[in-house]
Every structure is written in C-alpha cells, then in structure tokens.
Amino acid sequence: MGLAYDFCVAWSALDARREGFEAVVLKQYCRAIAMPLPDGGTTATMAEAQFAAAGVTLMG
Image 1 (tube, rainbow, N blue to C red):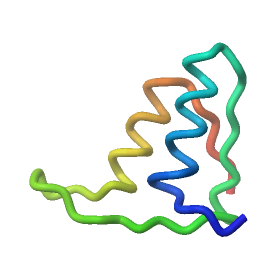
Image 2: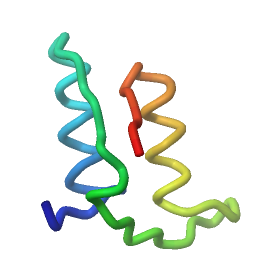
Image 3: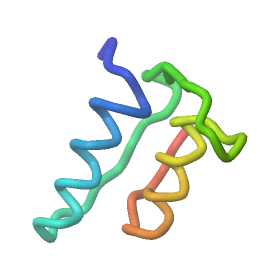
C-alpha cells in the first residue's frame, strides 16, 4: 500500500472502528514513521495502543 502505519493507516482504521466497522491492519504491508514522543514512546507505539483500545485487529 505504501501508507504510513502510524498516520494514514492508523487514522483510517480508527475512523472505521468509530463508525462501527471491523478494521484489520496488515502490518507487514505498512511502514511506520515512528516519530519520537515526549513520553519516550513513538507514534507507532501510540497507534498500537489506540488500536488495542478501539478493537482494531493487527495481522502480520
């Protein structure tokens, strides 16, 4: 797909869940930008925490 895992893919998957759709992210086909966050994590780890809270399924 060529989309950023922690931005474009994350926002789309989270939007889908908010609208009541099932969302599955095929992680092996994405790449994270993984920008550092002030708390020591990255935008990728933040996206995964949001996925878990929203019920997004990760595969790969």
